[in-house]
Image 1 (tube, rainbow, N blue to C red):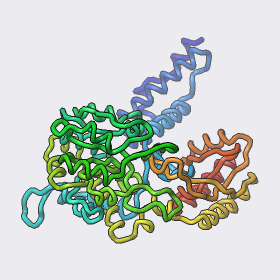
Image 2: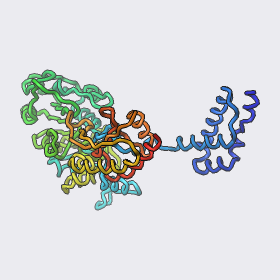
Image 3: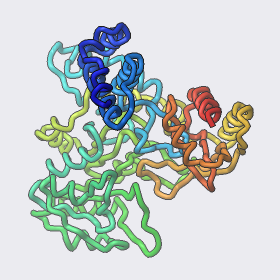
Image 4: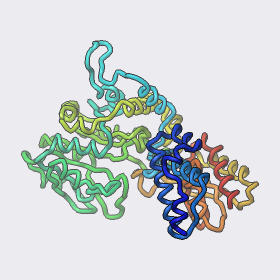
Length: 458
C-alpha cells in the first residue's frame, strides 16, 4: 500500500514541467524552487510512510508556493512597536527621522564623495563628514565616528592604554547588552584593569592612591546608563577627576554609553549627563552611542582632545571599526536637526519623549472608536512608558494606553506578532495594552487594520 502510494509521487523533473511551478521558477529562480520542491516531496514521502495517501499535484504545487513565500521572505522586517518602550533594543533601538532616512537613501543610490576632496580633486577622509558637526554641537576639539559605542571604548583603550593601567571605580564595572562586560572589553584592549574604591562609595583619594605616574594610562569613568545605585553612595565629580588627571598628566575618559545632546529633565525625567557637560568638564575623551538617546543610526561617537583623537584615527583598529557611507550620511542628517534646534520635532525618540499625555489620550481614544465594531471590550487607561535602551534606569513617562479585555492576552499578543505588519504589545493586569507613545503617527492606520483583522479571527 505504502509503496504504491510512494510511486504516485511525481519526480522533480515532472513537477518542473507544471505551469504553476514554471511560474514559480520565473518568480523565485531555479535554485530556490528546486530546494522547495525537494523539501515538499520529502515531506510528502514522510506523510505517506505514516499512512497518508499521496497528495495530488495541485496540493504539492500549493505546498511549494507556500515554502517559497516563506523562504524568500527577509528575516529582518519592520514591526509596529506598541510596547511603550521608546528605545527598544530588541526592536532596533531608535527609529530614524525622515531627514535621516532620505540622506541614507540618497547616498546609497550611486557614488558619493565619501573619501574624495572635491575642491582639491584628490583623496579625502571619510572622518570629516560628521566631525565638524560634533565639534560644533559638543565643544570638543575633534571627533571620530566608529560603528558602535563598544567599538569606541575598545579603540580608545587599545590606542591609549595597551599594556598600561586604567583606573576605574568598582561601582562602574558594568555589563552591557548581550553579556558584554567592561572588564572583558578592557582585557581585549590589552589594558590592565585597576579597581578603586568600593561598590557604593568611591572618592578622588582612591584614584590618587592607585595612580602611578608612569604605569597609569587613563582614568576611566563609566556612566551608570542601564542601572542605578541608591542609598549610601558617593562618586567623584568629573571636574575632580579631571583635576587629578591634570596633576599627573593622565587623560580622563568618560564612557557615557547612551549619550545625549539634550537635557532630559524638562520632560519629567531624571537628568541624563550630556556629552557637552563632559566636554565642558575637561574630559580628554568622551564616548557615546549614536542610536540611543541621540536618535540616529548605529554608531559610536568619540569626542575630545585633538591630539588624542588624532592618535585614535591613526590606529590600525580604527579601520576595522569604521562606519560606512550610509551611517555617516544618516548621522550627519540627525546632527543637523540638533544644530537647527529641530530635534524634538524631527527625531522620533525625542518626539516620543516630548509628546504630552493629552495627545496620547486622543490617539488612544481614536483607536478605541475604530475598534468598537469588533465587540471587544476596551478602555483608555493610565499607564507608564519607559525610555529603554540602557538609558535612564527606572525612569518612566506617564501615558494613556488602549487596554483590550480578551480571554487570553498572551494568545492575542502572539497572533499580533504573526500579523502583517507585526504588532508588538505588552500585557499588564491580564490585559493587552497598546501604547501610542511608541507607535509612529503614520502607523495608526496600519495598526487599526491589523487589530480589526486579528480580532475578527477570534
